[in-house]
Length: 197
Ligand SMILES: C[S@@+](CC[C@H](N)C(=O)[O-])C[C@H]1O[C@@H](n2cnc3c(N)ncnc32)[C@H](O)[C@@H]1O
Image (tube, rainbow, N blue to C red; front, side):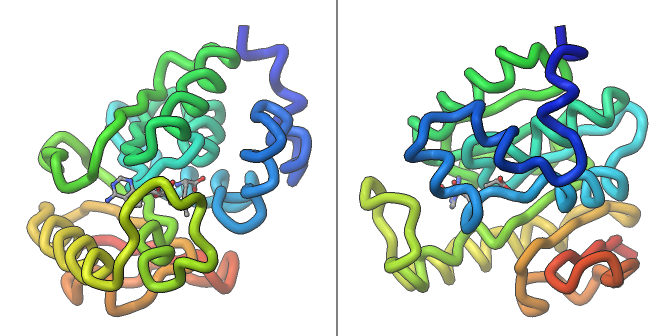
């Protein structure tokens, strides 16, 4: 099934991939969804046989779907708080027919981080600081939530075992515990690959 979708993933053809979604979702892509080339580079670093990788705030699933398409040896999971985005992610995944991609509807604070080996984080809490750039007005957005989620994630990442990998895209250094070493920041100015010591 998935072979027929290879064109969706051709080098940097984001506009073609974004056609999987309705126009209002497509219009959000440039600001809010991971570009294909970034998703590929991040997934190359994160992916290992038989590992579970979590996208923290998975939106309409662009990272997980791209990563899963190119890395069938790993499972990519996404958690998303907005139900409509979660449903669009599920639809797109089913259309392509990827068995190594799963989406969960919920808040990341309800998730058991022990279930995941490595993590991808596209500055998901940023809209709490800049509501003018928010995806929609359907959820609560406050600076307090930014602090709460950032501290929550920081603690969870800090407790993960040595060898845990993390990729941040447009992240701030302060969001990453000092127990993580920067392995590669050379591929794109906003893309950083980390590993826990
Ligand atoms: C910048 S978008 C990135 C989407 C996706 N990771 C990608 O790269 O294409 C961040 C997403 O995180 C979600 N999000 C933010 N805070 C969350 C939380 N506490 N729990 C679950 N999802 C959250 C937002 O609703 C949004 O869809």
